[in-house]
Length: 113
Length: 110
Image (cartoon, rainbow over the protein chains, first blue to last red):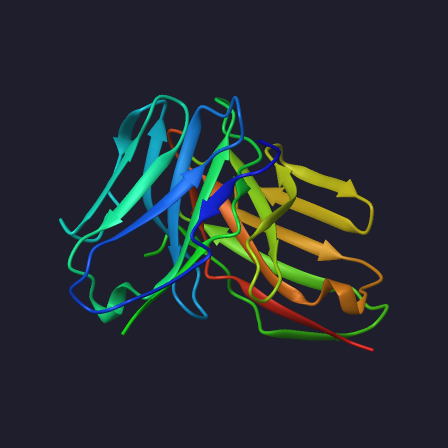
């Protein structure tokens, strides 16, 4: 597609429920990244995919967080048993193999109540 | 110590003035640096990148890199109200991952 597409744009969930966030990168972008941004704070790295492998998932905050990617296409970030501290905007970005020019999606705003 | 620190702001400048944003980084292996602009409630958008020592100019924006001092800066000349946003500095550390600073919020007063 023309840009990085994320869905849903907003998600309100009850504490303890599982959520799935989806990212559809720009066609041809082999690298895909997930970041988290809490209100008023900077971007926190979560995980990086090269193709469908994840050479760096050091930023995943706990085992409640997992992510997968199908080939060089869609990625899903899953948060199990959501907690209030998971409330944030989850941003996905993609780039060509050379890593220049990350393009971000518009994000998913997750609110855990 | 955070990998990338933005040590100025919030910043308020009058319209037409120069806004100067600063960033330092700790990983000497960092090769490239990026400046993103993020409007409130929106996702970051890339405005400049730099990988060589010295200055790089693009319109009203100038990025400066000093690898010996591990210092990156962004100058916005002739600041406009539309430049009011949060500016994020990022360093490319390894495997293409970008490490972001916390951001500097700029307000341009009309």
